[in-house]
Length: 269
Ligand code: DGL
Picture 1 (spheres, rainbow, N blue to C red):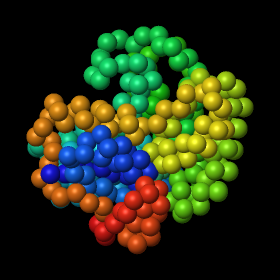
Picture 2 (tube, rainbow, N blue to C red):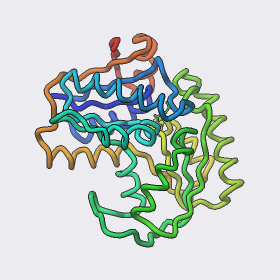
Picture 3 (cartoon, rainbow, N blue to C red):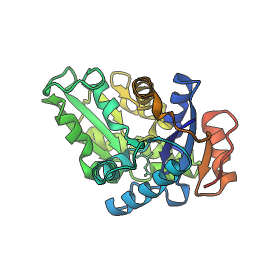
């Protein structure tokens, strides 16, 4: 009985980690499309094709529910996959909505009209593809009015993390935060709109300053997944848990072990 978790690479581990803590009885089958990471510099068609292939693989291995623990895939592929129709008994969900519900202080599934919220100036850090999709702003507009969002495309950060070059990743985070602050000098909140970025959460917080509330997706997505599974117990699936990668299993396992500080063993997808 496993729930599928998909990312282009290692970033989705930040969601997996929170989900495992929140739901210790649920097995998870994690799929990292490491051979094709990063997705954030690809066009929407490419991201859609890669995401659909990975999700089909997770469904065929017995997962009923697949979480796209990747904002880039959620922005570029999720709506199209859902509109085209998914096989009977299967579901695919993204990671935007729980984050936006937290930012706009909404309860799960509150579909009331958009209203004013406390936070007025929001910095969004995400991949180039997520930023250019404007999917975050679109979802936010359904729920809140009067929120000014300044988006910063953080080129290079995902590559540096995938390569395990945390010094480069930190330098890039600092320079992207500086660039954002030139456009919005005093953000009240910052959204880490890429699941890789919580691995650099301290660097973002330090560069932004203590006054800025930083939102990450791990715990928010885990809580909303728990809620979903309680209401849809049939979506636990039938397959086994584990870790799959389209990249080199040894290399990916070492990086994952370093990030999660526990032994992780990937197998070839
Ligand atoms: N973790 C993915 C996200 O949340 C990374 C995207 C990429 O591969 O560039 O957007």
